[in-house]
Image (cartoon, protein in one colour):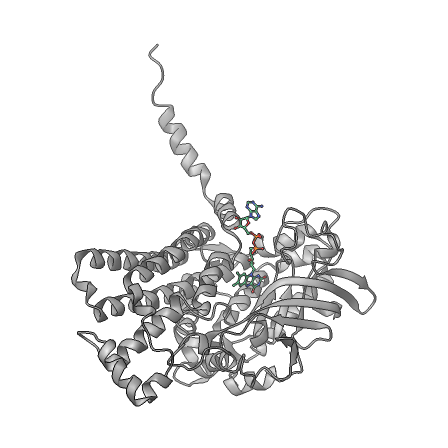
Length: 483
Ligand SMILES: Cc1cc2nc3c(=O)[nH]c(=O)nc-3n(C[C@H](O)[C@H](O)[C@H](O)COP(=O)(O)OP(=O)(O)OC[C@H]3O[C@@H](n4cnc5c(N)ncnc54)[C@H](O)[C@@H]3O)c2cc1C
């Protein structure tokens, strides 16, 4: 049976510890800070369970379960594209505003699963733990989130050099049952909406930092896992009409504190090995596959954002100016660039063993462009909207008041739209580009995969410099000082 929204809602009623505004939240499913985001996530599972979408969205796993295609390990270009179509269709359900939908970390785990030899070399027990875990989360279509970066604290120091020993989550004890983990991870996007969390360290570590060099997975409800929720934008959204995006897609980001959490050995995949911690992401296609998912999602989001931009320009009729057409053309070019990169990654893909994965460097190249481009796109849409996104009724209640609704009609005019639809569009535009939710999205696109210097280093590391340097050397060898 394909997982449904109801199955997901039920699974979140697990007694997890979420803290908000100084209080322990009882049940996230019905809490006003999370209930709509929870349902948006659940609706993704309903979408895949719909008989019309089952073939697009799911495949039959080796054990016979019908599960989301992000768990599939593609063996050809055709299968990679088929898998992408499922990721794209899910992103379309949220216009790309759920950054960490369940297919993100599933992609990461799928990438790790393509290199069982790497885990074997680390230890056969750890390899078995990982492959068993993969089979479990795949066959139960679990929503896994991840926390792989330590809290900022002092960024000039390594994870093991902070003032307190367990500022960054580390192994504080271990016995025959498993490890005990204490300390924090910086930001768990979607943890509140997910079933499980994968914790690890993606930043390079030094010898001596072994206690921080592990990777493991636990259910959100595990004893001692404390989710410190950031402010909920959903809770202050007012209504769907006033904040159509914040009210539905506030996936939340929580600091995760591990208060001496016991993790059994069969959930520990990397143990006290800084090299393996890094290799788990970079010597397998994990980093490429989860960031490829993110580029597919961004492609969908940009498609949506340029649509908003064009509708705004039509509504105020600034589209009649050639400069505005030029600006829209530039935005369309930026959206298409990411789309072209996604298709390029697939066409130029390579084999990792029997698996077919997207081209590594094109993926990083796309991320480098995206980190610079997203703020430019937001800035360009702000230019187009002008004060229209501020000149708005305070809330839907203004439409209910007789006098205020008449005033809205007089003040919210457009050559192509009535006043209600003008307000509706501009409120959507503001939620996407300027509200606290929109602003968090700007920060998200700039940082979710690491700061710019980190992403650019990956691009540096994976570019085919040999080809470039050979060209330059060949050309240099064609001339010299006159004899
Ligand atoms: C909205 C959002 C959601 C996120 N979700 C997740 C998640 O689900 N899971 C997860 O694990 N992480 C998540 N992250 C965390 C993300 O991985 C980190 O933000 C990212 O790794 C960058 O680290 P940082 O934010 O501490 O920035 P820092 O490393 O502190 O960098 C801040 C700035 O300092 C400068 N800087 C820092 N170090 C250097 C250096 N060595 N050389 C040169 N300049 C430097 C750069 O200018 C950089 O832009 C999320 C982040 C955001 C903003």
